[in-house]
Length: 425
Image (cartoon, rainbow, N blue to C red):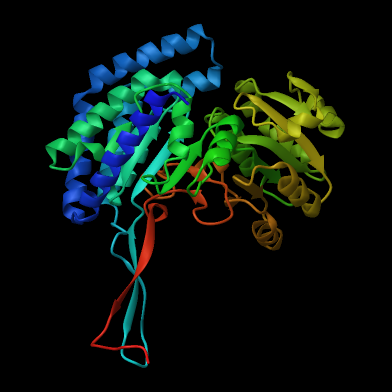
């Protein structure tokens, strides 16, 4: 590891630890005022941010990156306004810090309270999406945490411009600017340096591809909360409302195919497959979705007039396409569908569409994923859509945090014990 990178990251860690101690002592009103100043600063820097993003997009197109990656990278007036709006939404949310989770009084008179507190310093390593810079920063500041951000090289210029605006907002509100820091080098050694900096970093959250997450897990000396890939699956069960099933499936795949909560595999019960494929044909064909289907599904799709049908390969059942490509399989039962999801899915977001309440409840109980849906699109797995204002990732881990990571997931707790002179005999 280059010594200069290690020293840079270590110095950032020291500054972040100092800032976190100041943040933890601030009131909710003070932290909310900082968030509003950060939103204003982001809008004031609109010209600089969009110009920086244009440089990143041009480099990505020349590389070339995939269409989905460029879509995740690109900012425009609407996306930038949405970022500022999300910050203001977070400011309006209840502050979990200081919440009393439980209280008890012991027979000796000791009063014990379990109280939410900030984690301290949070490290976020992410790829492609510059909006994560703002989402992660404001959620951390709201909960009294300092944050160290390390974005991908493909969004480096955008992230620098966004982070500069957020730091400016912190300063204007009287908060330490070092509450939000962006690693200013693209050297991959910075990832290892962050992962090994347990003296100053309390938790690290990697969100990106398998290689990034493996590298962080391999080197981390502190807890890791993983935002793994999103191989989301929708199962259309018999009986179901066919038009509803078609709308949900098309939306889950096509509304924004390059994101982690988009559907990648479609399972359809044999009894409703022909009718369902006919009903969904217009939507999938309009979006030019390639269907990689098993033999039974391929026949029915071809009969229904789908022009882009190819034979599914074994690896298609475990691929997060992030493109207008969909793996399609006919199943004979709910049990088969659940088995496929638990074996081949990524435990991110999975859905059943059916009018059979008992089957739906069995699915919701049996599918081992962070978010499970009945009669709704998987595209709702998102901090904003869940009412969290934003999120720093979708955790696919079993232990907390799991699912969209909002404010509560950025807190820990401590026990506050109040006595009147008790001693242990």
